[in-house]
Amino acid sequence: MAKSANAGKLRIKQVRSIIGYDRKQGQVVRGLGLRRIGHEVEVIDHPAMRGMIEKVRHIVTVVPARADKQGTR
Image (cartoon, rainbow, N blue to C red):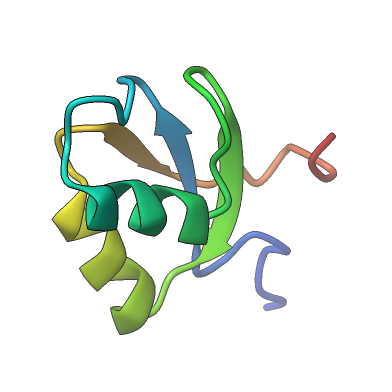
């Protein structure tokens, strides 16, 4: 059986502002590819990304990527 195109990916959404947090946390959010509140990105699920997400878990939400979506904007 073939793997889904989105297998091993996570969908990350920025839900809070980085203003008022440590500068390094803002850099982590930018490193994840997020630019503004409400922005969503799809990243590969691996330990480095999981570590970055853990550092800013109070700023972002994470869900598994949907298999029915054909790509990002």
